[in-house]
Image (cartoon, rainbow, N blue to C red):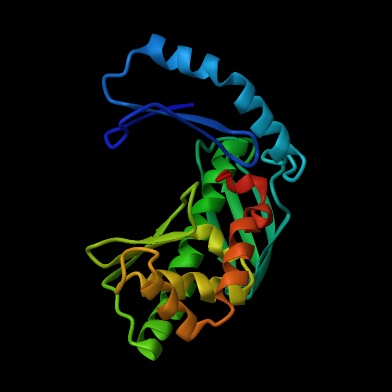
Length: 228
C-alpha cells in the first residue's frame, strides 16, 4: 500500500507484524522513483515479513466468536446475524453478547463494525481511567482521542490532546496504566529526557520492564483488528 504524506521528506517503507507493507512517500513523488525504491529494498522487506511471520499468525480473516478485553475487564461472545438485503454491518452489545447484524458475509464490513465497537468501549473505559490518573497525580490534559494507530500505543500533542490506541483494550491492566502515565507525563515534558523518565518513575517505578513489555505487546492484538 502506498500512502502519500505531507510530512514525509523522503520515501520510507514500513512492514507491520502480520505482513502488511506500507510505502510512505512525499507529495509530488514520481511513481518510477517509488517503484525503484521498493525494488532496491525488496530483500529487506521479505526478510522483515519472514521474521514477523515466526511470531504473528496470519489470522486477519478469522472473525472472532468471542473477544476478551483485559484493559476493560470485559469478555463478550460475538453473534453474526446475516441479512441478505443489507449493504452494511451494524453492532449492538447486549450485556456480554455483541451482535453484528447485516451483510455479515462481508468480512471487511464485519471487521469495520468490530473496530467501531472497540472504539466505543475504549472511549468509555480509557476516559474514566485517564481522568482518575490525571486527578490523582496532578498531570493534566485537555482532551482524549481514541485512534487505531499502526505504529504507536499513544501520543500527547502540544495542544494537550492525548491519543490512545484502541488496541490498548487488549493490554493487561498494569500495562494500560503504565501507558496512560507515560502519556500524561508528556504533558510536562514533550520528550524522553531524563526529567521525563524521572517523572514517570515517580508513579511507576517498574517503568523500564513495562516499557519493554509494551513494545512486545503487539502480539496480543488479534489479526482481525487489522492494525498490525
